[in-house]
Image 1 (cartoon, rainbow, N blue to C red):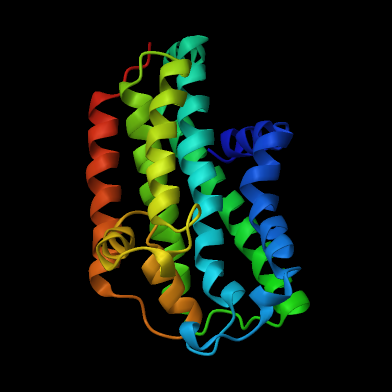
Image 2: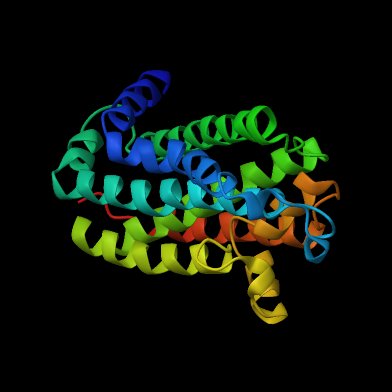
Length: 241
């Protein structure tokens, strides 16, 4: 298992575009937004906080979405299309281990991205680290697992890598929209914000735990339910060839 995870990690690092977007892009985006003076000025509309203080939760969403809905479905679907999964099935190593390795790599890459983001937040802009660290850690883990489960579901149902990329893009755009990546959440209607709070990877819980409150147990429960249901359906409907 460790050998497979190590190989998958090396293969991930050989994709510079994915590494750049999944790990570095959220931090680069923070640096760009932080270079605008107006976004570094406390605003009563944000509770006397700055725009960049409120946006850090969305930056985590961007990283997780790239990993769970761009990298994972296309990687697994490509493995199936090229016969990698079929060859795995003829060895003592069960192909399911390859899927577990994909999720482990996603969680590791997501952790690197979040640590890099927190370092820049604190050192460059003086943004406090998550005020509720345990809640933030649990939300990050469940958020990454839930998006990975959705990515595996797409990979399980898609007939080929191209279809997997297309289907995953639709889900990716929805997650990014409700997560505030395209339009800041404070500009969205309350209904859309409520929907976004309950969708993976739980932007509401991420923001709450970063700014000081414990994440809503309902939000965490939804993330766990999505992980369980999507992961189970993906496992039962997965095709190795």
